[in-house]
Image 1 (cartoon, each protein chain N blue to C red):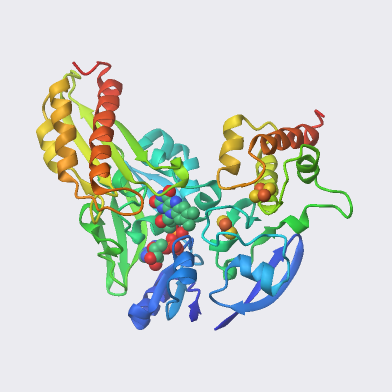
Image 2: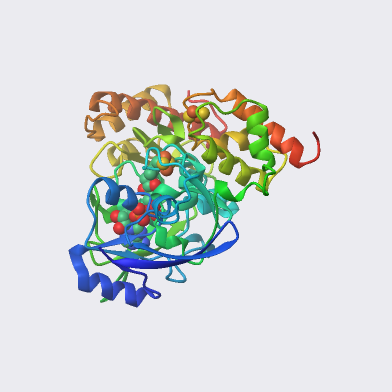
Amino acid sequence: MSVTINTKINGQPISASAEASTSLLEFLRDTLEMKGSKLCCNTGECGACTVIYNGRPINSCVTLAADANGAEITTIEGLADGDKLHPVQQAFIDTGAVQCGYCTPGYIISVKALLDRTTKPTAEDIEEAVSGNICRCTGYNKIVDAIHLAADRIAGRA
Amino acid sequence: MDYFEPKSLDEALSLLAKHGHEAKVIAGGTDVMVDIKYKEEPGCLVNIKKISGLGGIQENGGSLRIGSLATIRDVETSSLVRDKLPVLWESAHQFASLQIRNTATIGGNICRASPSGETLAPLLVLEAKGKLAFSEGEKTEPFMSFFQGPGKTSLGTKGLLTEIDVPFPAEGSRGVYLKHAVRGAMDIAMVGVAVLITPDAARNTLQDVRIGLGAVAPTPIRASKTEALLRGKSLTVALLKEAAAMAAAESSPISDQRSSGEYRRWIVEALTRRGLEQTWKAATGKEVA
Ligand SMILES: Cc1cc2nc3c(=O)[nH]c(=O)nc-3n(C[C@H](O)[C@H](O)[C@H](O)COP(=O)(O)OP(=O)(O)OC[C@H]3O[C@@H](n4cnc5c(N)ncnc54)[C@H](O)[C@@H]3O)c2cc1C
Ligand code: FES
Ligand code: FES
């Protein structure tokens, strides 16, 4: 059975149909061809598919696409303003927090959600915010550096 | 696969009555979506998230009413839960990642009836009750009798859990929830132990002791023999040792990829000892003598 999904993604109203069993991640990647959110574990463990759903970071791979109905969703595609990268994206580049890049969209979304809540995150806040994101390449120090740099830039401290 | 989004409880219950075994309820979907992808698709999915009145957390006389659709994050960030039900708060805090806590519901955690479900041992020691709705009517059932086996509850295939009623523990009581998992909160518990004690007025003996064990039997259980052993006594080093060993003996863990049954028993013993020690100190201000 197919369901019609009326949602708002990165501020744009979108209406599309998908099989009822479709996950939000499959809806984004396969139905809407938005490939920024990554498919990795497909079981909610790694965070590569993280999107912001009504203000909260969630794993789109274990969310029903139909739950996007009436919701507001932010994906990695919605962060940059034209050619100008979002401060979190820029900070990941500037600190070298990216290697293969597969985990990066998920991290950036989790960090954006964190910095939307506070621009003075404690070590505990940071750990909580990215505890559901796994990176196999960089080691986590550079990611933490990127989070501090982005927070400082957003708050005008750097 | 058919798909329904009932707007009312009655509509949802009649869908379940009509579709029976074919139907699968979905709330947050963190268990159901994984099953759909890796096990099998149900004949139809009944999404209960559009039913109003199933969320929220409110104080209700001497207890807390938690709607079944309240997320684990709602539970974790509720100051009422944190202040009045620290045992439950701890289990929500040690629950997976922020992303999962933002999606997973407490009702889903309960109805999944996994022996390792994080909130279950805490709900057992808090003597919480569930409000169960069927097309024939509603009933309230203590969680002590609700769990019947892995994935099996007294809801069967036709009922819905609508809310959870958690009485506030007695004045002066202290509780802890201790989770043992390889990768901390991110991992499913290998063993979870909830301890809640109430000292007598003079703070010399254990007037009430409740010990809940998760992931070490087909359902979450209370270590009732251990509780009986401890009740009315002062906690000594020898009694603590005896109680911890008894709790381990009351568990019947399986061996699986996460650990052997024998190892799980050791952990039950260690966590029961630690839980009793911590709560005794917090409740009486005394060391275990
Ligand atoms: C990566 C990951 C990590 C996890 N970590 C943990 C963990 O640390 N601890 C833990 O305990 N669990 C964990 N889980 C399991 C899962 O997140 C929890 O069991 C969660 O609480 C389920 O809630 P849900 O709303 O997502 O349930 P759903 O998947 O929607 O439903 C779960 C079950 O309950 C039934 N159901 C749901 N609501 C109701 C209702 N109101 N009435 C009747 N039946 C209902 C459904 O039919 C289904 O059988 C994890 C899962 C993932 C994917
Ligand atoms: S792909 Fe969703 S959490 Fe890994
Ligand atoms: S950069 Fe490769 S997984 Fe993180």
